[in-house]
Length: 323
Ligand code: TXA
Ligand code: MG
Image 1 (cartoon, helix red, strand yellow):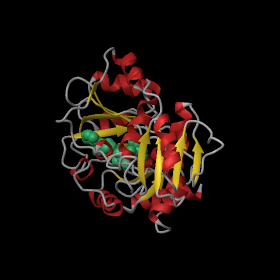
Image 2 (cartoon, helix red, strand yellow):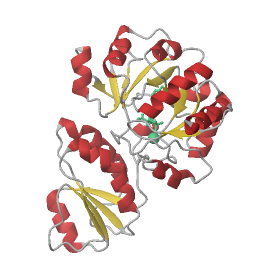
Image 3 (cartoon, protein in one colour):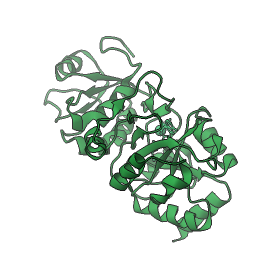
Image 4 (tube, helix red, strand yellow):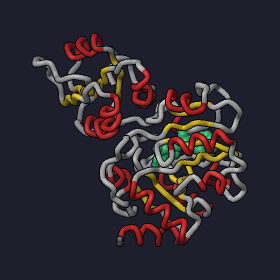
């Protein structure tokens, strides 16, 4: 396939390639090439001390790019790879500091998207086999879940492998195994219950001394338009008192609603997560002065969605302030 060849050529030449994964699109570079990796930070506008995830073709990548991974790391990889789980382990010496932001650990992930698999397998034959990639969006923006989203972020200068809409739509679960007991740094499609079932212990939540992770900053994944999370009751209230609002709801618009835009994202958590970033982009582009998001339930299957919504709304104004 011509596109795959071009992607390989660019990676080998130390250039950037955007590629699909089952979670979101990644902005990739050869993980063994510090100069290539530096281009990711420059293009994204990301601070250089925020570590990148290294993508590998298979479980062998765990011992190639991690240093003496624990049996738990292999257990998790065997259970959930290829798939939406990133495992943080001590880094092998071949991982450049540019990838890890100088940290002694590395995040490893084996994506399941067939195009990502093809790319990584081919790159293992002709190159280092490891692709460092953050989500293919500018720092702080909403992650891309289609090739068009990536083109909207970076324009025509960036080569994008088009693998259609991402199946999961939210970034991978991140589990840190580098500091003893497992710590859940970012919730995702692999849930804490999934991890507990395999490891026999519930992962802990990250605390104040957890390593820096841009995906764990507040005010991340944010649309440009002021966005507020509201209860169903406050949504009714807001609809009566505010003008020029765009709404992301769990149900259809009431007959009386006068809004700029209304998206019924439904009440299925997987489906909601799959569509979330696309929906936020649509509402952001609607010209509304404010986005109101009806709060989903707090049950476990909504954890990853609630995490992203809380970050996207962080720093936004309460409903009775003008944006
Ligand atoms: O689903 C995903 O994980 C996507 C696709 C492209 O694989 N990637 C992604 O990358 O979301 P990014 O850079 O947007 O988010 C990766 C997160 C960041 O919060 C980063 O700080 C954290 O992973 N991370 C990476 N390496 C780490 C490490 N050694 N220790 C702690 N956090 C790390
Ligand atoms: Mg990101």
